[in-house]
Length: 112
Image (tube, rainbow, N blue to C red):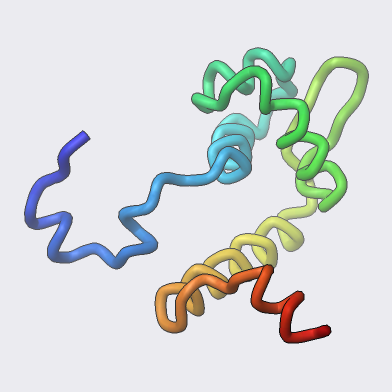
């Protein structure tokens, strides 16, 4: 999908990137933090492939960014944790923009 040339000129590379599945899920759950949702609905409403949603939600749960009870999921009520996670994410994006993405294979090779 094309964007306006003004957006192209004014935005950073990170701002032009599509959000990750985790970002989409967190954004949706945060915007609807007064409710808990079934995974299939989260997938549909956040535009995440339904085959991927369980893995995304479980990773977010391991990071204590979402809560899970029965078949329902909700955003964490720990707003400080969300704030820190968001700040960390923005910092990583900025470093990647300045210095390039890290290459895992390079790290492994250098450690041998």
